[in-house]
Every structure is written in C-alpha cells, then in structure tokens.
Amino acid sequence: MAKDVDNVSTVKLIDALKRAADSYGAANGKRRILERLKSGELHAFGFRKHSNKLIPIPPQFWQDKQVDHPIDYGGLPYRQVYIDWAEGSARWDWNDDDDAMFGIRLAQEDFDKLLPPGSIGASPVGKDAMKPKDWLTAEVKRVKVEHETVPSSKTGFAQLLEDRIEAAARRGEVTKPVRYRHIVNNLEAWGLWPISSV
Image (cartoon, rainbow, N blue to C red; front, side, top):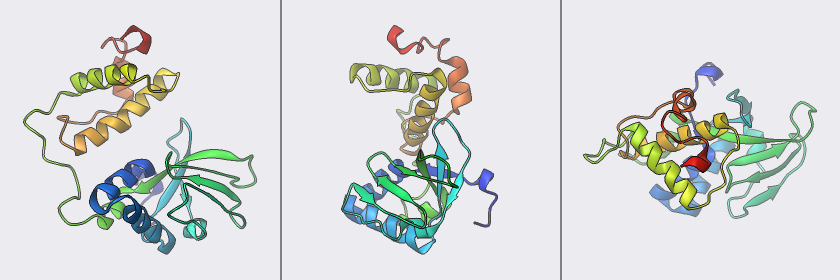
C-alpha cells in the first residue's frame, strides 16, 4: 500500500460488512468485499486484541475463502485456521508465533470505492443528532439493558464505544465522534464506569 501503514484510515470488517449489506444485500455485499480482497484492490490488516498495530494481510490469504460459509478452513502457505465473518476476525499462525486471534480491518479509502455513489463518507448530521456524552450514555444504558457482553477492562470498553460512536457519527446520529482516550478518561466522570453502576 502506498500510504504508511500507521496512517491508514481503516474500518472494521464487521462494520464494512454491515455497510456493504445496506448497499447491496448481505450475500452480494460480502461477495463484493471478498472479490476486492482477493484482487488486492481492497487492502486488509490484522490487529491483535487490545492493540492498534496493523499487520498487512496479503491478497493470497483470501484465495480459498467462500462467501456462503460463516467459517472457512484453509491451509498453507499462510496457515490460516478460519475466518469468522460474523465476528470480523481470523485465527492464524503468523511468523511462526502461536495461533492468535486477530481482528480484521479494511482500508477505509479502498472500501469507500466499493460502495455505490452517494453512500461514501459521513452522513449529514441529523437535526436530532446527540452530543457525544449524551449518545454514549444512552448507548451504555442500552448495552446494560440488553445484557450485552462487554470487555472487562475500562480501556477495552472505551475502544468498543469508540467504534460504535464512529459508526453513529457516519449515520448522522451524533454531532461528532470522540476517540477512546477521551472516552476512557471520562467514563467515571460521566457515571458510565463501572458499568454495573449505570
């Protein structure tokens, strides 16, 4: 990729699948993403849990993957074990390390080119868009009511909320996204941590 990997703007695979499904339908959206991954037009990166360090995933990694199986078994030369499309993650042995679970992110710029005209970029901010603190408060309450499993650490929880508020900002539901460092530094002040206290 021409850009410095550390500066590539990315979107989580699971969020990309949702956006592609909105534009093309679930099966066709996944197929379009997979075709671009196999051709190398869409760049993918792996990252370890609780880490933002991106590791490029070569196009060859995707060659034996199919769109209609939630878990695909693979083999050499990249020794992948499976892709979990529903979770947007992969487990494989990289550089002879132990098998490790990686999240998968796609290059945002490449992914945006895959979407139909008019769906690229952020949605206009809606007149009822909420301020970040108010949106996050409502989201944490929803998570608690629905008994959703969340990371046990404050940092992990903040990273989860960062991903969600970014998606909400693209939909025009929030005035602006905020980064996880801002979230983690304010969770207690906002009365959102520990989550059991909400």
